[in-house]
Amino acid sequence: MWYVFIGNDKPDTLALRMQTRATHLERLNALKDQGRLLVAGPCPAIDNEDPGPAGFTGSVVIAEFATLNDAQTWADDEPYLAAGVYDSIIIKPFKKVLP
Image (cartoon, rainbow, N blue to C red; front, side):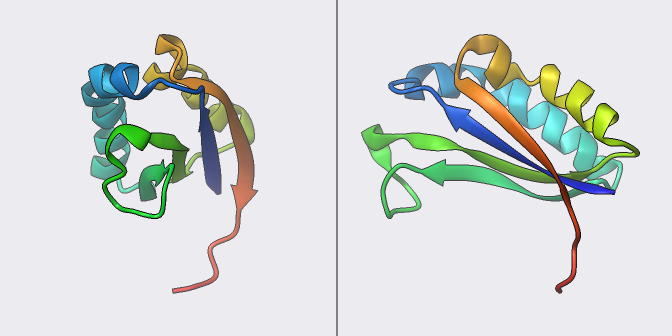
């Protein structure tokens, strides 16, 4: 089943986010290589693809896991969470309808 992960950034963590980004992307690329990643990306803090120093408010990932428990286990190992970038991660089942 697909699950949506909504990671919420703590304030003023852009520098920490950038330091941790490579490890974060490694995990996403692993899901992509397994054919289990639908979409992933950050949420800019302002209405601009490159928010500059305004940074980001969080990220969204939609990926496939066997169970909600498996999705939670994956989220618990998120580098942004461990580094203190994320305040929390919300996980919800997701039903892909379109496209």
